[in-house]
Length: 407
Image (tube, rainbow, N blue to C red; front, side, top):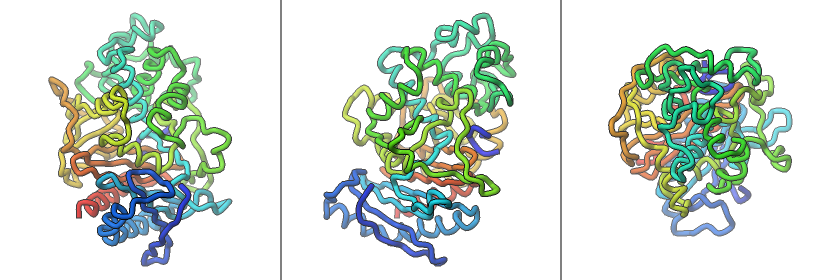
């Protein structure tokens, strides 16, 4: 079952890189993540010094995963030292033949959870909620139930005691409160981690209640604009619909995400590789000048629980750097997603570190995403695809690319 989905879990000149299979991959370099008319030549030349090796690695990664998984379109963005390159492959729609660009909108699935965490972190920094607040403070409807005494942090870190990955099939929105009130835990809070859309989805829902606004409004009208993400949204504006890619199911049917209970909070964000690599750079200290927002962004990388070789933050999952590939694969494996795993609380919580590899996967029925970055190296990669393909292949591709960035 895929990780974290509703079913499971810029204009400018381009250069071409041709793979051994003859696939044309467009490449665009920008400086400081800003795709504009003026590119600082010295910085662009500095990036070009490492581009041939990196181009070859990205081209080979695209060739492998596109062929193996029959992916119609891929948008990969890499950043190192404050500079960005985009690699675009294939089409956003097999029907229209529209090519993928860094402005193509993809569903990012559970990578959405990192934005939910950022919103809640901002509300905590501005004192509109606290992570140790109990659920019943914002949801009196469940008073008297086991969930009422769980904390927001329990929900955010999937450690409430066994909230399931998905809502029961066929459950209507009107039944959500009954579902939560009737839920019975399988473990004490803080003792195990069970990855769950119903857990972090509720975390986002309660954060919005704390702010007194609908979740979608907070994200589309406040958070995304504050981060300078111009093409990221839950509800895509009509003027941007032409840039929205189609995803492709296993039988090659064109599909898009199906609305569900707390979908916006858990897996409902749509974005571009240009915006997502900007978000990665923001995570590493770029762009955001408002100290309150910068503090909120940084706080999402606080470590609360150790689960095997992974440290659970708010949305983000972190590993000591350098992280062995096997450790990354284990941390993103089906066993980590679908089964309860022992969780060891980090007391006091681990302050955000730079010497870690931070990552998150995301999937919907027709899309697959992966984001990974190392703040100490100022290096990161974003992979967006319009097919939900194997997570281990996403991790391997990103690992090769990050290693090339080091080179």
